[in-house]
Image 1 (tube, rainbow, N blue to C red):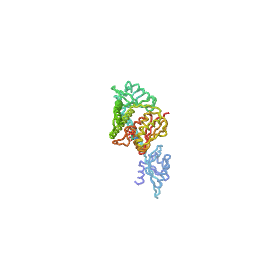
Image 2 (image 1 turned 120 degrees about the vertical axis):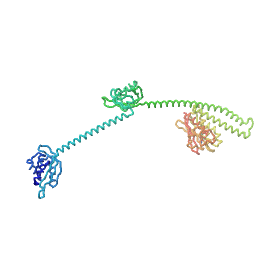
Image 3 (image 1 turned 135 degrees about the horizontal axis):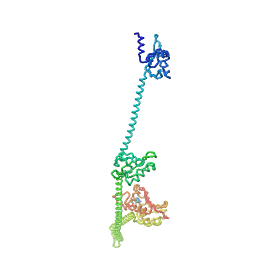
Length: 522
Ligand code: ADP
């Protein structure tokens, strides 16, 4: 067999469409495969422009492929669609190869078109199947996610320590969690078969229903505080609960969710705290009474003791005065010295007892005042005169200021006592040759009376302390000191009882100004 006929037989027996074309696209050969793929006989096809197979809009693409081949290139397995004679679309895989003439020039184009319609259809249906499977699995995943979200939600509700119940419009229990079942001792079936009021003791039902209805009707908008009620266990036991209601759904048939907490423990501890408080208060009251009665005892003791001490003291003072007068015989110098000691210390003791009595009366509220409108100048003059001798003995001069001519409301005896105390201190704590001045200034409806000295002064940190009982500035416990440390405490008590205040301005080694106020009298 010569090679030409062998080739022709080979071409004809091919399943693929093998088509020869001139360079400008006119069909020059058409094998049996082409007839099968495209439906046209060789007679119908040969001599036609190859475009008769193209689908509308494909020409431009075809032209560019032909141009590739005209340039000597090849096109392999280009997938395209062509029109079958019957009008159906045929999917083909296209290979184009240039045909060279003897002179080596391209004289035509060989086109092999394989019908891939079935393969395409197969691919298509496989794709559709894959898509369907994918969609199925996506649906399953979404459903599974939704189911797991719901499960998680229920796990959450079930693990809540509080009982949670959803209640329908007429009180029926729609949903309950694990805590609810445990709290009321019922299964979910049992709970779902009863109305909510069945788990509330009879006495509480009306209130419960009322609150639930109000919540359902949305009458109390906003957050509501939980209310304390009682719960009823299946076995009949009652227990305190705190219930908070919230409303869901629209106006037609809103449901109410009740979150219920067993507050037995809380109530019990509240009770314990209350009982503790009560017993604490009772104890406090008992102690207060104790303190009161022991205070009264102390006051009584001090006043009795003071009186008992004063009687023999007066005897000592009286007889030592008599001895000092030497009516019953002269005393030798040594005896006189001893007598002076006895007199001095007896007077001191008497002063101390009087001070203690005063303080005690003051703190017990037993010190009576007889206030009147009186001349400040008169009171100061009296006090200054009574201390003048003592001041002179210490070479301290006393001076009355120019502003004392005012009237004050005070108890004359107590005012003299205050002035005497302050003047006495001023003289006591001032060196020889210095001056003590008493003056006054008006301050609104009060008169400020000031006793100034140029003595040793008081350290700033001690200025407030010296008004306390028994406080003596700059004195160490072991050091003996003239005085009792009671004078200023008594002064403060007396000034305050008359509606005034007392304080000191002082500078160490420069001197002090003791001020106190009394109401101005008009
Ligand atoms: P005492 O009997 O000791 O004088 P007071 O209560 O009268 O008691 O005074 C308390 C203390 O205040 C005194 O011991 C003294 O340290 C101090 N004090 C009082 N007045 C003066 C003053 N004018 N100058 C310096 N210190 C004073």
